[in-house]
Length: 448
Image 1 (cartoon, helix red, strand yellow):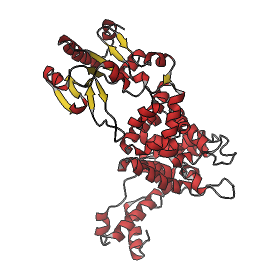
Image 2 (cartoon, rainbow, N blue to C red; image 1 turned 90 degrees about the horizontal axis):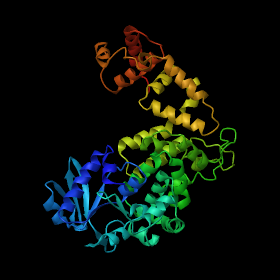
Image 3 (cartoon, rainbow, N blue to C red; image 1 turned 180 degrees about the vertical axis):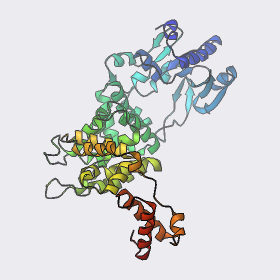
Image 4 (tube, one colour; image 1 turned 180 degrees about the horizontal axis):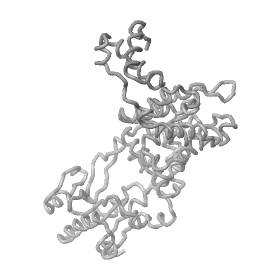
């Protein structure tokens, strides 16, 4: 692909990267694109970022560009600002061993071939000379791209020993590119799968987020299971394998198969919603009746507890944790819609997470026996009732009750909640009725 051909594409970031390339070349340096952007260029995909490598040392790079950020000079990396975009410009290097499963103990500057050999996978180990449209491949990446194969560069054991997160990255690339993992690479992942827990939760979360929100997430889950990584990352999910369910409600199979099928039905989910679907039945394995009756009493409560443990393990935010916990805890509520009191139904329909809970229930039903009657009943009620009926303005306030002689404090709070419930149930419809009921409740204090 020539410079002209590529420049005609609407890649403003590419143009900014090319300015850096031209500047370094004008001063006699070798400079190439590297890594994932080369892979994407060859796959005719739009790269998200452009990593640039050169034989110019960090001090030379900083001297040539007006705006730079020294983010990793000891590893030969400088950020260069070009046309408002940030690019990592790295000096060709070889790593001198690893001690923390992520960072090399030291580096030495070298030439392009040795730099390629330190990288993770062949499809990420190629270079591209953009002004000539020339691919430089020391590792067989072009052949593996054509064969749709994820293959570690050199010895897979050594590559993963340098950074065990690469095992998760192999799954991510195989999923998102629709590639297969090469046999020796797969063997090394299976042999080292238990080491994945040595990686920081934040880095694991980053990879899982991509895997679980991608359109081929069900394939990603199967790969996580096949590699053995899921057994160590999310053993609670793996526990669903072999846990039988009643055929009438779950003709699809055990809890694991149901979960994978549910994940396949998601459409452009957020990470927290994808996790909620992944974990919605995570309480079933620990609540299964020992008699084999395939009854899972209160599995949603146990599921909430487990979901909170997993969220803490992945260092999710409080908001993410509470959202996931709520969805897991309440995903069975739809079956009760026909029997709910008006006040309960209105609170249910008016909850800020109702739409996501409804989508979880819909997916749950489609991934089992396909019965959407409870979902349809809830959505019909949602359509039938106006927003004002679902969330009416309270008939009275605390000031109104205080003016009626009711003392402020915990009792007033309980009375206000009881009044609002009565209002939702259409038991009271006017302010006078609300105050009259409040006085009766004050005389016989309601329990919470």
